[in-house]
Length: 400
Image (cartoon, rainbow, N blue to C red; front, side, top):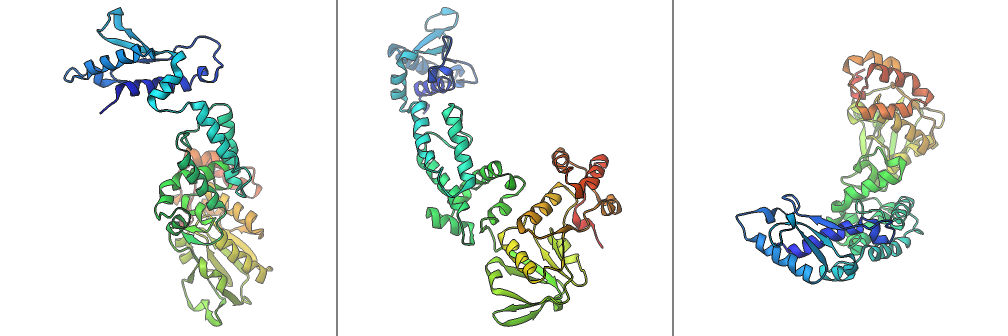
């Protein structure tokens, strides 16, 4: 059952809280009003129901309590309500009637709560908190991220943000959720909001999907495997395995990476990381070790690459990815975070021209990302061509 008196008062309070009147900065007299229309209060115009009379009774009652003034259409008392006007001097009573806390009080409660997160060892969360505090200080809306009235839910959300950033033990999403919230499904309910925060407040995560981003913190939906193949030998708990006997290589879970050792790199001259799995299976290079990255690399894959680099620093290191903005960004990010001198492999202009018949058109987002990347000297030539010819190429199209 709709409580029309509270509904109308809440609409008036929403308007009031979004006005300068609520923070005492109005420079002219502001009238807070709610107009009766078929959209704003459709039941009032439904001739088949008795809601019309009920609404009149409730509005007259509010007027008798001096909370509102009813404005009648064409000044015909008791006929049609054109709008109601809030009596601002009764604002405290209106808040009490609706059971609602004043916005300025809620803002202060939330500011006090948020400030305790400024000292957390969680840089993304700290940046997020700073943003919210600035908006609250200036009485701007924060409802995109938090609900002022629900401090308990806000506390759980920030606990989740910090817990993600401080996670050190590889785990699955539902394990993580149980550990921190005693509910295996809770984290999945807020995951999209968490991802949005991390993308907005850390430039490195802007292009990552949810799976890649959470994997950076060792949180996985399914077991995290690293695939590699080549003419090397592995030692697993003292047992030797010759990878050259496995045509399509082997996958090892992130949990087991720590337990493997490479016993013979003598024939490896090149180490090639591959962005996509199909290309990894298809690709064969003599005297090479191939590692499948699966899009953006994460801590597990970087740890493996650094272990390989420590063993054979004299080898040449290459990355093979898509000839598009995403592929270039993955390559640059890989080189930066591993500090390994990677070079691009088959991500050049000649390769793009050779396979241009399989190319796709650029989206508007592609174009904007490429324009930002054009200053990268090693890709400037191919990027200019891509923008000129409106083309990009997925690495699976490179069939040799």
